Length: 161
Image 1 (cartoon, rainbow, N blue to C red):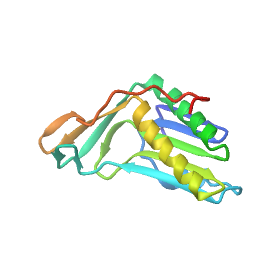
Image 2 (image 1 turned 180 degrees about the horizontal axis):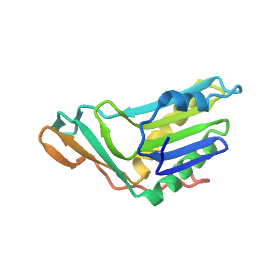
Image 3 (image 1 turned 120 degrees about the vertical axis):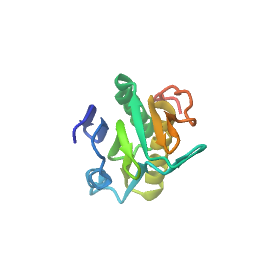
């Protein structure tokens, strides 16, 4: 995978890339013999957005130097909340992503399914709220920044749930 930024250290695989993302690869890497659950979220480009139909592509831009530190903070916070988390994958694409293509993958492994679902949900929701990644949508009527954009929140702090 060609990447803009990557960090595959221990049980965390964090990446910002221009290359296509493969959920199968994330699932295979996250799976561990000690874990009975792997939960995965795969975000794809859909054909509509807030107030827009006919979306054809999204161009993702990022404040690159802040992405991996934010991913690391999210993963640390998740590990604090769910101490049994084994492996965590957090990948996001930048650049042009076409209709139906994968833009983000989060995968987590845990001994039990409840924690896997909760942790996966937490990681993707926290990523969306705290990571400086923005999208410019191309649709039948033109190209513009997503009207659903909101200010980037502070990264989670370990020890402060």
